[in-house]
Amino acid sequence: MDEIFKNENFKSLREFENVNLDFFGVYAIKVKDISVLPKKLNEEIENQDSAIIYIGKAERSSLKKRLKQECRGKGHGTFFRAIGSLIGFRPPIGSLNGKSNSNNYKFSESDSIKIVDWINENLLFDYLKAEKNIDFAEQDLIKHFQPILNTTHNPKKSKYLALLRKECRDFALE
Image: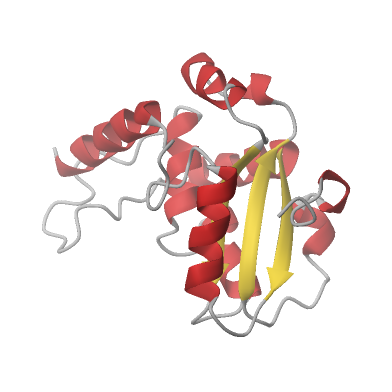
């Protein structure tokens, strides 16, 4: 496991914009400097062995498409909602009223642009190409690295993030 997601392989998402990512796989996102995160989350990260904050998978769509959802706000990316809530953004009040899924809140377009800028400045990315057992690989990597923003398969998921995400859902359902 120590050979996977080595520090020297992480790069800014901007560096991957012209790279062919039209394949399936598992990816990791880490923060350059934990001090840019809220103090409560910062304390949770300090207890981790790694600055990896999220591990995701691309198994039904390409890595390129998945990263657009998760890091560019194109769709309902779990990671994008988590980061947006952590850095202080909230969805428009009432924006989920009448929607079938009350978890898929979105931020305003102007807030989404600010979140993408924050991601570009503060986060790094690495990936592993995979064809088979992507679900298993993701779960195994989450259990090993315990990235605090993963809410599934993770014994050390962030309690602070759970509160912020609930606050966002409440805002969007007002």
